[in-house]
Amino acid sequence: MIPNITRGDRMKGLITYLAGPGRHNEHRDQHVVAGSSEVQFRFSDIDLDKAQTSALGACLDTDWKTSDTTMKGGHVWHCSLAISREDGVLSDDEWQQIAHEFITKMGFDDAQGTKGECRWVAIRHGLSGHTGTGNDHVHLAVNLIRSDGTKAWIHHDYRRAQQACRELEHLHGLEELGIERTKAATRGWKEGEREAQARRRARAKLQAESPQVDWGTLPVQERKRLIAAQLDHDQPRYRLAVTIRTAAAQATTEAEFIRRLRGQGILVRPRFAKGSDSVVTGYSVAHKPLYGESPTWYGAGTLARDLRLPRLRQYWPDSIADSQAATDEWQAAFKGRRVAHPQVNEQVPQPEEVSDAISRLNHKLRSVPLDDRQAWASVAHEVSGAFASWSRAVEQQPGPLADAARQLSRTAQTYQRPTRYVPAAHHCMMSAALVFSSIAADNNAMAQAILYRQLWKTVTAIHAAMEARHDAYQARILKETQQTSLTAVAASLPAVSIQKDQSTSKTATLPLSQDTQPGRFTQATPEQFGAAPIPYRPPATQTRGGRER
Image (cartoon, rainbow, N blue to C red):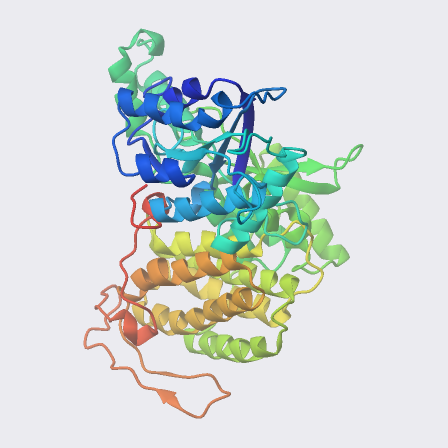
């Protein structure tokens, strides 16, 4: 949650703006969600027309007008509170509770009757941005002159507002944007990324197919139509992150990782150490141009912290031969040459063997301390790679599997480089990733169902660890992932009969599907996989509190 504070002395002007259409008609459904006692009683659940807006401004200014108190910098304190785009849209009741708690933490309330109350209001008017696709937020306008004529204490209000937001994020399970080095570090996306890529692609396509037509001479509506035709379903960086996770999950060495990336149609550009053309310290990636347009490069760290090269290298051997092979592949990628060492045919393990291995891993995870943040981040990184491989194998467009990989990866991203990880998780999930990569050719629905059952348990274990650590935000997104994305996956898989963990002697007998032919899915109820029957919705339309994004 990000607080943005300004000061002034024109309360009516501020309220008129907040209750009005905005500079670009971006304000929609303007209404009061919270306020001080009189304000909330008089102005809740009413339309903020011109008369009511004027009355609200006058009500908030009452204590300033009836006292002789003045404040340097103005008596009007304005703060907007915006949540992360990943948190979706809160309900009015949730914003009302957050607003009241924020005012209390800032000391603007009556302090349980020991001080005069500051008059304040919280106004909400839809998502930010002139397109209405930004962050959910609320505006608070506070009169710093209390009802008893004294001044509110605003010393270090910027720092105290940040601290209040950190506490509210933790309390309400919102994305924590603090700077603690143990917190998860997630990467967002810029609103214009998809459109910018689509515009470059549409312009290059026009130039390639109709060189006699100048892009600048096209009518605006025609340009918009061409851009819309090239608009990707998902954000460019999200698709790149899924591809990198797939390559990293399936690779046994750094050289193999580079080959797999290039084999999946990704441009790779190494970053060399200063003064060296052989020591690689990082890398950037880009989608291959479709029509000769300029590629858009993304540093691995701007996609996700756990995809940085130093993080990935801790899972690969560090022998002299492997290092030399990796250097050869980096050089080939840098110079645009073919791969230096072609991939040798690999043995794909059997799904049943991988399922048993993940079952043993789930049993081992019970001995991992729940407060060991680094170990659980490592496990989440590996499981995310397995789901990314599954998505790349069966989803033509990013769907519930890609969303599950992305949400799990957020638990894996930490500011601090992990020094502890679970080796068994790396071996199990690498095998699972290889099995999923072969599904594209075999289309083995039963193999997917067998592995799904064990992966569900692994995700449940990670969720339990986040709850035990009182990490409300990570626990919430993992729970939502299970209830939406993974439930949608279960609904398209055949039912299976599979042994439970080896730590127990019971067998979970699920009815075998009558139609188990490759390439044909039969509906299995999510309850058979331990999931609640909630339909999947893409991340762009996820909600909180029942309000659509």
